[in-house]
Amino acid sequence: MTKDQINKLEMYQAVQTYLDAHTEKWSGVPILLTLKNELDELLIQLRDHSDIQEASRVFLGADKNNQKRFVSEKADILNDALEAYAAITNNAELEQKAARSFSDLYKLRNQDFITIITETITLLEHHLKALSDYGVAQDQITDLKNSFDQFLSLQGQPRQYRIAGKQATQSLLTLFANTSNLLNNKMDKIVKRFKRTDINFYNGYLAARIIVDK
Image (cartoon, rainbow, N blue to C red; front, side):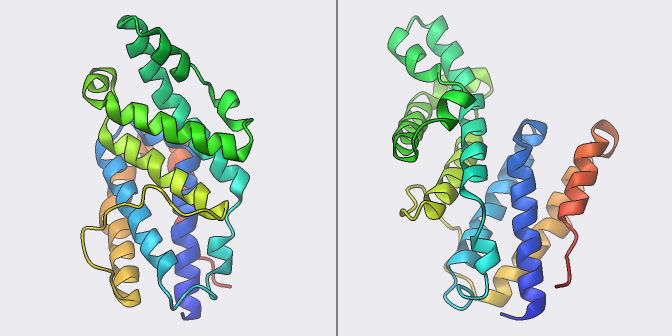
């Protein structure tokens, strides 16, 4: 992998990390959820590409605790909807399981965390049809799965929810071209909507998009 590719790869990861850290800002925009999941899939393919493992040590060195926080925050948001649904349908057992807050999840030992998040995803998918009335969409669950898989990788465990790629494994050059195209021609244009409504979030996104020449 060339120096320019390494710099681009770190920028892609910075965008992914920034979006994960501010899920509450953009998760209500369905098209952004779809694009974020596409970005996650491309980064998984880049990460798995045999030619770049050694060169991408910084990319792979994301902080495990930060990733655990991202997963806890996303699960907390979805648990709120699941808990509301359980309360209205008088499902006490489900309500109890869905009552776990961000702090409840984040403070769990990592192995217990994996067990609980796996159970949460299963419950969300089982009740997805009913949860659509509570603002929960499949893309939100997919986003949670993606972040959880990244945590599992950092934990040294196999991913459970690898996204089903729409295409066969692509070449390194194609992966870089497709990721840049996704950001330049799709995601950047959608995020521009925040320029007037949330300038701080927008400026943070632009900062993540800067390629740092190292």
